[in-house]
Amino acid sequence: MVTKMKKTKNLARALGILQVFIGLGAVGGGLALVLEPSGAKLGIPLEELRISPFSTYLIPGAVLFLVNGIGSLSGAAASFTRYRHAGEVAMALGAFLMAWIAVQVYWFSSIHWLHAFYFGLGVLEVLLGLSLRQNLRTRAESTT
Image (tube, rainbow, N blue to C red; front, side, top):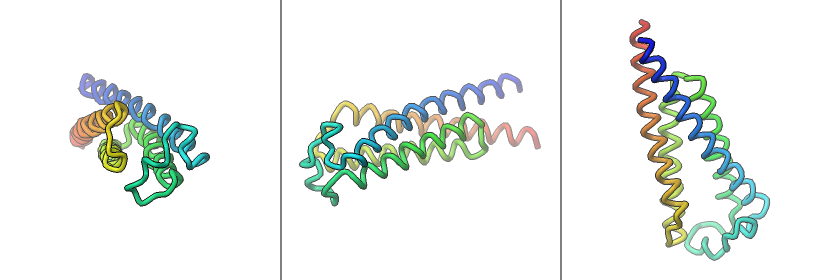
């Protein structure tokens, strides 16, 4: 049982670290887009939005900041404390990150290496969340 608890703790820690990484990057990127909706601060031309419903990066930046940024940092807190629904939170955040990247690729009509990188992080977050969910559920069942 001690080994199972240690595995759950290590899994939660790894997931939390991943979520902090995603969250800090999204807070920085989202804030830059909100403060400079033209995308100039990040070197993203407005022309990239030509087939999107947006004329500036204000709304995408706010979503990036709030969901991928603050949401991921909140998910990290849930993971580090091994909150009983931390796995589900991670799976939802990872799925949102993958959808976010898929929409970007569609709107931009191109793939940048960062798209593939963050899509992969979304997949990893979903898988780690699923594993943490299983471990937390097993742990809860063994204590009842």
